[in-house]
Length: 200
Ligand code: S6P
Ligand code: ZN
Image (cartoon, rainbow, N blue to C red; front, side, top):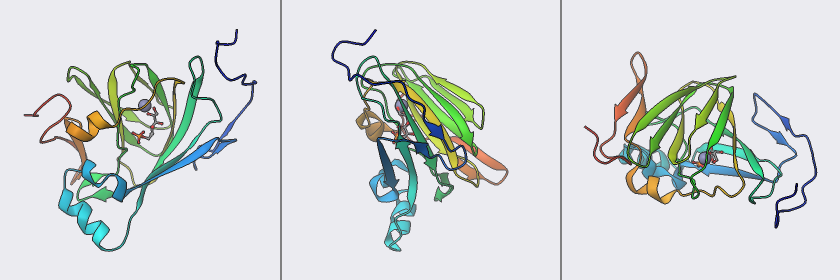
């Protein structure tokens, strides 16, 4: 049954490039460079130093499936997070809440990473995102994805057509944990402040 007010979308098939993150057909693409999210990283001086060289690396990019952003539809989007660090903190997404608290799931397609999730009352969770993993994000949990590997981290996200994205709350207080390159591998560290308040 069509949802009142929604676009009369027809059935279709899209093709996913598991290694590249390509999505064919797609409605739009997006690119997020370091200059657009330098404040997200714990080491502001390291972010400034990279940008001062004149380099503005692409931290992540992706493709939006050709689906209307309307109630009743399921949006799907690929993301490709490049490998890299700012200081010792791994490249990651800005992270967001959905405006309408609603669930989402991610499918890992290539590379390795960690999803940081935080509920509105400050509960924290982390899940590993690797090929074949399906990670469930419950309604009301902010989420950020971190590339902890040496290759691009590629994944598909599926979420409600009217979910919307709220970046402001994450920009204000960040997540309570950060993921750094440690001597023995990725290390989860407490941030100076987070969505759940001061970490410690
Ligand atoms: C959408 C889903 C992902 C992210 C994407 C970029 O709800 O969670 O597709 O949009 O990984 O992250 P961000 O935080 O910049 O939207
Ligand atoms: Zn989301």
